[in-house]
Length: 340
Image (cartoon, rainbow, N blue to C red; front, top):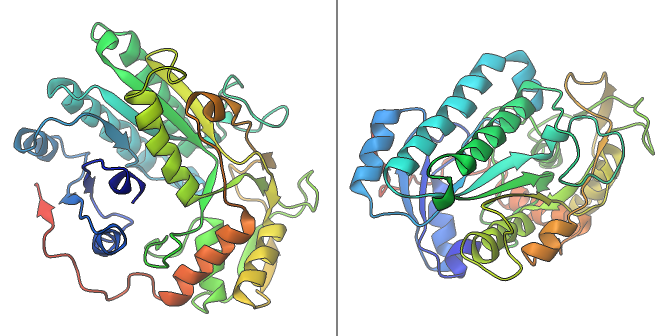
């Protein structure tokens, strides 16, 4: 939405492993513009080759494609290494071959592991505590090597370390709709609020935090989208105070730590309901607290978070209450292009 509204021409490729093409028609309803959508798995190199051959040359790529649940990655590490690492290798090779050498990579604050102090700056040690985080750290290393390689001078690489994106578009038309049981706090909490789930399980109440539950830096998904637009305009395509080198890393976060119980209370306020929950044991791979120092993004990308926890919860509730079954049985988009 943010890119279309800023005049970019957008093509989306997705294998729909954990998403729904109905969102594309909703984007068109919001913006009056329809992005090209191609159903494609980047782990299929033949299909990826056909896609690049059939397309006009791209100016830049924003790489979101990847599995992203910490707990699942601990249980199924090979799935994460196969999908996240191999898919990225195929994508980078195709980009190199077809002359698209600007990329924004969706990394994660998970790469910092359990930090020695807070808030976290981009120069903190990389020490992920779970396979998901390790895939992100490995891909970052790949990208740094690409930037130093024989064609490195032609590449522009922005690595965005997200903290915890939540929320939905204020229209209530698009939001998070994970397939199956949600692996992340906010979509699960929203489904409890709308009656699709019985209760929330809080994983651990004995952390060294303000109320014993995990503390995270939540960022509204619209602020996150604006961060990508800024990475393009001020970073990839920009000058002046933008990128200082051809490969830069930026934290995207609010700098505010919010606990699970605080989020539970805020979502209860937004929905007007007392949300049921129970305490569970700690989840493998989780850390006690994690929140950002985003000064570098504030300065170089001219970006900062603007939307707080109340807005995050209000927008999430608007999305979920208007779409209790998510995208559910909404009509599929018949204009989908498929490469096999």
